[in-house]
Image (tube, rainbow, N blue to C red):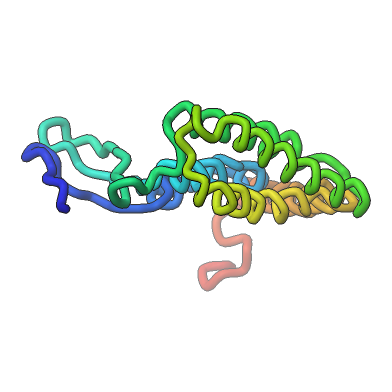
Length: 196
């Protein structure tokens, strides 16, 4: 069944994630900001739970690009809006830029994964009917979320994530210093063809 677009809207772009479909916010972002940005992960799960994709379109009246959710099909949502919000609230408490800066050893990581799976499963099971979650979708929801949580939390192992920030920051500082040094040199002083 095709959905008709209102006549004032022209399709612009289609994506399953609004962040991936338009990466203009990354043009001026530092490498560190990009690494700490967890919004695309949250959006991916939200789209999965909604059973939707993002469609960008150009509003022909205003000329502005807008976005909207487009369902993948009838009954593709995994939960009602209350359920989606409840699941996302739990997920946001796990996947955020503060948590990723933590430091776990293997024992703590494995226990955290077990606890999160148990808590997520219990939370969804206790609200199965309130959130309109189909019993057949229960395992799919938990497994899909855990397939994202496990590698995300592995960034905390042995403080490797924070250690890697040092290299990112050092690279940015070196590049900034080079740019500043070049701007202070007289024209042609870098040894190009026009250098004297």
